[in-house]
Amino acid sequence: MTVLIIADERDPSVDAMVLALRDRGATVFRVDTAWFPTRLSLSARLRGGRWTGVLRTDHHRVDLEQIRAVWYRSPRAYVFPAEMNSAEQEHAKIEAKYGLGGVLMSLPVLWVNHPARLADSAYKPHQLVLAARCGLRVADTLITNSPDTVVEFADDGPFITKMLGAVSIVEAGVREFAHTEPVDTTTPEDLRDVALTAHQYQRWIPKAYEARVFVVGDEITASEIHAHTDPARVDWRAGYGTNTYRLTELPADVTAGIKRLMGEMGLVYGALDFAIDTDGRFWFLEFTDHGSTCT
Image 1 (cartoon, one colour):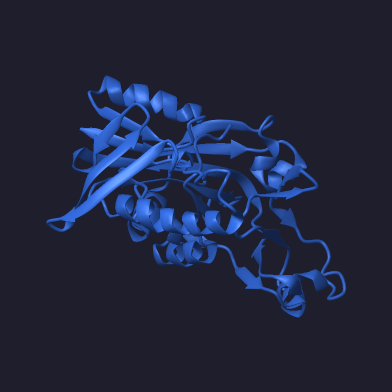
Image 2 (cartoon, helix red, strand yellow):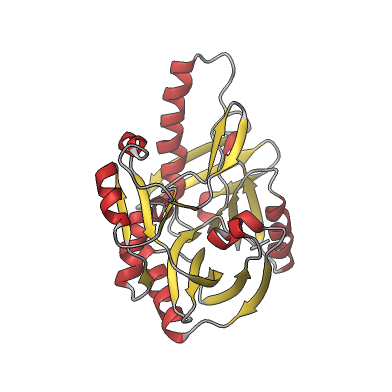
């Protein structure tokens, strides 16, 4: 069996996976999308309702028909020759996306995970609707760019704000992580910048602890995350060095809801975060395909 891995060539997690797959008798063809088009080439023809052809690097090649599974780990931006101007590079990027990307995503093989399904799952509002539909508890949530609506939301109790997309912001060359934050100001004057774009707010859940749940096919592994600092009690990612972790078992209804959710999203791998309140109830927070560990 040939497994295609699409990943950053500097990703050490992939090195370990390559060895594990080879130990199990698989042939591994690893590519970094940043190699295209100078170090990676594609030749594909449509025959019998599927793409046939070859992917080539400087040292290896694989026939598209031989690929049986794809690990879509960490694709990078295409890198084009420096002599191309910005307009030419932008055009080439679009053609590469729909050409190389289109051929690969149409391969009728096992994907971990399929890029189209990942693109859909990236929308947090969509995640929340699906989670609720699948029987998981979801906190009262507001998405708005209206300061007045945020003020009204505050009338029902404490709440937090969290990013809908990016988990970090780069300003003046410095990367700052955008952790979940409590909202402690609720006047229209203080919230006027809310009008500039969409914001997400959720009702605060009094937490006993949090949990990260890893799903790989039918296998589910969960870890309790216990915070020991005030920032980490709001968002455990603010306390990597001080949190404590331990494996745990999930309630049957939560496990069933997770399986339904993964099925609805069409995904076979991912990490899901939950807040567990003081009554032991699990509240779904979000799904990510980037989760690899808790520490």
